[in-house]
Length: 161
Ligand SMILES: [Zn+2]
Figure 1 (cartoon, rainbow, N blue to C red):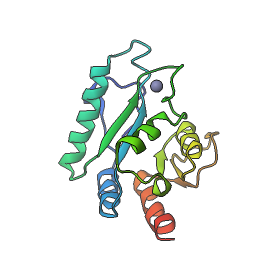
Figure 2: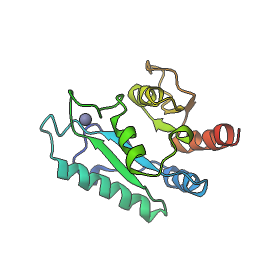
Figure 3: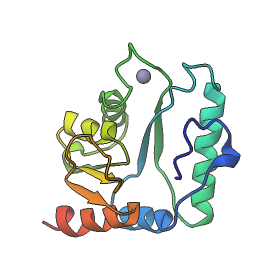
């Protein structure tokens, strides 16, 4: 979705063009679609955990209207002193432990250096959906123009390989 900073209000969700279709392509290829998100706005007192749940639900609903589904949400509400805030891999470890996920065949899509560092922390490909010239995070496997572009690259050049 559009990056609008700390988001505790479901009405501020804007799903970007092509995202739903790309999620459907991943589902068709047999991939679970799991959201792992840092929500330190809770630790900062900007909003509560119920707001995070509401935002997640609204995002899922927004995607459902376009025929796409998400399989799970993992979120970190902390600011520090936890093992789940990206780039720490706690949320991925939880997803692997709780769901039927094959980590070796998984991939992280994200728009920040912490997302790519997360991928590297668990030894899987990281695809950056961010073409900004000021990106200074770890080197991703691929820099995508859009989420759909990243998914296309992953399915054609990583999965098919
Ligand atoms: Zn945490």
